[in-house]
Structures are given as C-alpha cells and as structure tokens.
Amino acid sequence: MTGVLDSWGRNINYLRISVTDRCNLRCIYCMPPEGLRQMPQGEILSYEEIRTVVQAAAELGIHKVRLTGGEPLVRAELPQLIRMLRQIEGIRELSLTTNGTLLKKSALELRQAGLSRVNVSLDTLRAERFRHITRVGELKDVLEGIEAAKKAGFDPVKINTVVVRGINDDEILDFARMTNSEGWHVRFIELMPFGDVAQSVPSVELRQRIELVGKLEPCPDLNGIVSNGPAAYYRLDGAKGVIGLISPLSEPSFCSRCNRLRLTPDGKLRPCLLAEEEVDLKMPLRNRVPLAEVKRLILKAVASKPERHHLKRGNVRLTNRKMPAIGG
Ligand code: SAM
Ligand code: SF4
Image (cartoon, rainbow, N blue to C red; front, side, top):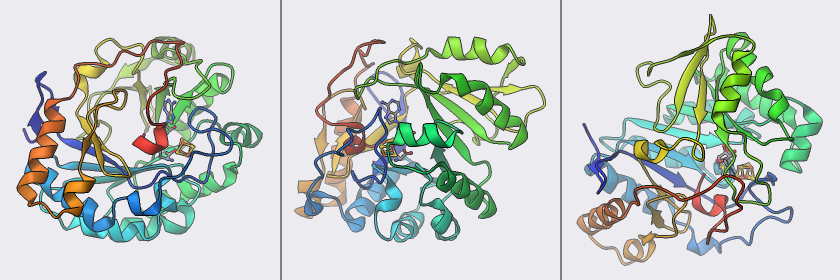
C-alpha cells in the first residue's frame, strides 16, 4: 500500500490539482452566468510550484495525480506541466478532467506529453440542451474532442455526467447505451448543491431506471482502469464500457472510501471538497521552504481530513469557494 493514512484509517494516495479557476463554459450548477471573480494571475501557482508539491506528495506515496479546474485546457502550455510531472519518480498515474471543448486540438499533444487518462464531462447528448446547461458551449466541440482523445490512444475515454432532475435525467438511458455502442465508461454523478440548482437524483433511482432496459452486473476494478475512489461500477450485459455511480449525497459510506486531497489554483491544500479547512502551501513555496516542510504541510492536511461531509439532499450549501476555485 502506498499513500498516507489519515485519522480515520483511510489511505490517501490521490491528489487533484486545480490548475486554474478560469473556464470557457458557465455550467448552470457550477458557475453564475457572468462567471466568477477571477483570482489574480499572480496568486495562481506556477508550474514549478505545482511540481514541487507533486514531488513532495510523491515522496509520501501519493502516486495518483489528476489535473482539473476551472477548465484545465484554458491554461497555457498544459502539456508542459504534464511533461514536468511525468518525470517525478513515484507518479504512476496522471490524468485530466476536462469539459472536452478544447480537446480536439490538444489530445495528441497531451498523450505524447505522458497523460495517462482523460475524463470528459458531458451532461447531455442534445445540442440545444448542451447550450442550456453550459450557457455558451457547442456539443459538437465536445464530441469531436472525445473522438480526438480516442484517436490519440486514450482508452477508455471516461465520461462524467452530472444528473439534474428535470434537466437531463431523461437521458440516463441514452448515456447507458453509449457504454455499449461506443464503449464509453459513463459515470453518473449526483449533483452537489453548490450553485443555484439543487435537484439531484439519487443513484439508487438511477440504477432502478437503467435496470428497466437491462441488468446491471456489479463490476470489480478492471486492473485499476475504472476505479479511482468512491464510485461503484456496473456493466450492462455485453457492453464494453461500464457505468459508474458516484453518490456523494445518497451513499452513507461515500466518505469512508475517500482517498484524496485537493490543491486549489492559489495553492491551498483542501482536505475535503465540502469542508472549509485549508492548508496554505503558496506562501511556504514562495518563501522557498525545504521539501521536508512541504511534506509536513501535506501530512497536516491529511491529518485534518474530516471523517465525512454533512451535505443533505435538497439543501443549497454555500461554501467559501465555488467549485472552479477548488477543483472539481
Ligand atoms: N471544467 C472541467 C470539467 O467540467 O470537467 C473540470 C472542472 S469541473 C468543476 C469537474 C467536475 O465537477 C465536472 O465533471 C463537473 O461536471 C463537476 N461538477 C461541477 N459542479 C458540480 C456540482 N455542483 N455537483 C456535482 N458535480 C459538479
Ligand atoms: Fe467550467 Fe467544468 Fe464548471 Fe462547467 S463544470 S463551468 S466546464 S469548471
């Protein structure tokens, strides 16, 4: 086992890094229409600073890293960061979560830079609805991005779908069928009440609705291909792709499987997405503290991971930061 044990016996081996709070979309459950007040450029960690954090994390046994945002592909020269992180001994998996709109032109370069996996967030397969959900986006760009990722050798491409009642929950079966026709790995995520939209659909209901068209067989970890923490996986009979259910609200044991820390664009380590506590790394990094001190601060963040969050369905909860400023 690699990683660090937290106070509740969980093995923390995964770091999600938000490389920017900027985004080219305005998803209704994530951002207000006018966007968020942007962090000043100088507050955002440089690639060298991120590399130092990952180096320290890797020395502690945290061997999986995911880049996210905001939209990570709006940050200039992202492949350069990937090349830098790839060279760190102990980093076994380096992945990216993206809205996919800019993937068409960058997929191959990302692959060549050493990116292991890509998750594309896509909540609808209907162009008009895509525009409604993202307020400004074009579905075609994402579908072309997914194709480009496949061509570049990312296999499987994983799709993250946030399900919102009354907005896209009538497309669950269409997405489920894509695990068959396209081999997509689709992960349905329960909406967390960060924004103004709070109508989540519990995973148990999703499961029942999918099972009306075919039996879902529980699917064990396929050599690490599908699993990365708190999701349950299933497969429709004969399908190449799998269906994952991520249930932060409805699954009581969700937090017990949490394996992650988050690094915000402005250099705060956040032990839990949904708790306000943060450990600042930016000032220490800018004061050029030794790596041992960065490791100590990472351990401090791990030690302060809460046992669980206290979100409830239907409640809109205000946190000190919106999702893009934390890293979803
Ligand atoms: N922009 C990139 C993207 O959309 O994939 C990366 C950042 S985004 C914040 C990361 C993930 O968080 C996306 O899959 C997005 O759908 C999800 N997300 C955003 N707001 C959410 C919410 N309120 N509840 C659940 N998931 C959310
Ligand atoms: Fe941007 Fe991702 Fe948030 Fe949508 S979910 S607004 S793409 S950061």
